[in-house]
Image (cartoon, rainbow over all chains, first blue to last red; front, side):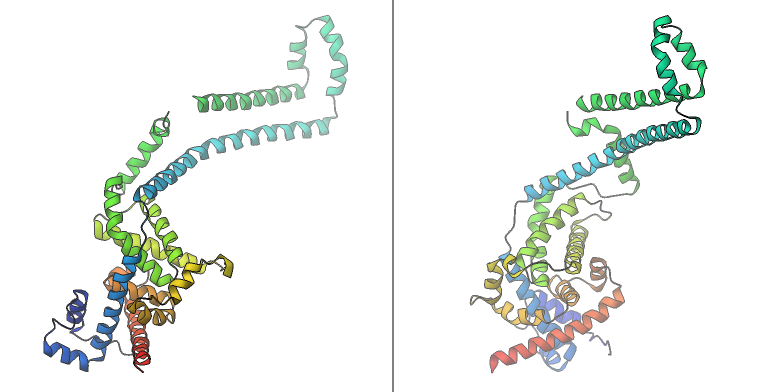
Length: 172
Length: 191
């Protein structure tokens, strides 16, 4: 297919778009359009589309720009809130992951060394009866699992503390 | 407390980012209302005539404006804004055509059929409507942008995302085809 544009196409298009075709057109150009296929097609198509545009634009039922403005503001606000919420959610997931990791580690460690804390639970009433202060050193220096219990408790406290701070900040 | 005050740092950071990219400041509501009044009819006409569905055109037009307001633009001025708006509309229309069609006949409003087959059809629609219905969606878009909106090949390329050379070739073929269809339509009515 040959893409040969007629040099007078722009002239014809301008006249049609200005609404001056064919009344305000010189005879010489009209004769050219009658003989030139490209210009004839251009005039026909542009006239049809210009007319259709005028009619379609007149039939448009326009809504309120204020409503669209409000919808856009709402969408922007939601996007901003989502952007803020993303790191907080990440921190929560991270805290939960650490906590679960510790719990899994503790269970694994217990499985390897036997469930020794059950015997400690049996001795607890006697220890408490003897002296409450003696409980702490025995826990700390007693066996390896006690440090695991402490770290789990610390992680739980940290998690709960974080949630409490977050809720307090949100309330403010 | 308003959310803007609760997150000042985040907003300030966003504002700095926008400045560094030389983005156009967003329109205020009054400027937008003026721009809407000047551009909405053209956009609706484009969407309605290329999709053949006035209800869809209304939905897409509203979504186009909302996205336009939410987007960060790079070029300033009414002409660029208008072009950007048409680009959003074109993309939305393309997304709509790509989506699998699930509408049943009961879901299509009766007004749609009345509009396309009623006795009070405008003359241009009687002539252009059947011809447009035989064109491919992309050709309808190209023809409308070129001959109804008066966009250049370069501008159409920006709106549609096609290359300028492709636009020239596709438009040439589409124009030839629709001219033939319009000619046949004219002859048919005269007989």
